Length: 164
Image (cartoon, rainbow, N blue to C red; front, side, top):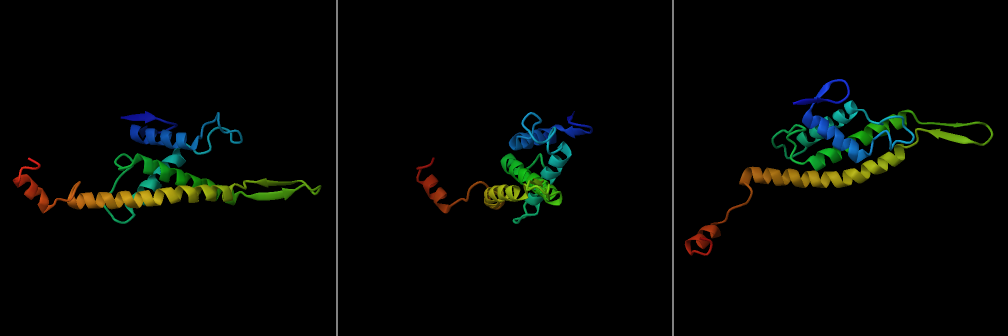
């Protein structure tokens, strides 16, 4: 089932993820004092979600491919999407950075948030990467061994009635 968010109809799962990412970013017109409307369009958030999914799919160990609606961790997917959005905004801020002076000593910096964005990216990446690595390893082990690794002791205990 699809819902309409903006112009094209989006699958409900993607629309829900976009809403979650937007909520995490607090990117709402009423909260944006310096930006008219929202800073990141639904299209750019969807692109960030796609990039986050591809990051998961291309990180070793290579286990079964996922999509945004089959990703094993919504938390990690949203966190990585936030990282991707901050990277998008940082590129834009860097490209549009301009310092100018009026000749009277007043200096204005336009689009000078790239260093602050880089700090936030570093903070979020330091949380995301270890959690992603641990989850991929756990899923890989579970895929090979199941949810637990059996032991011959299980048979001994069952025979002696301790676990019967």
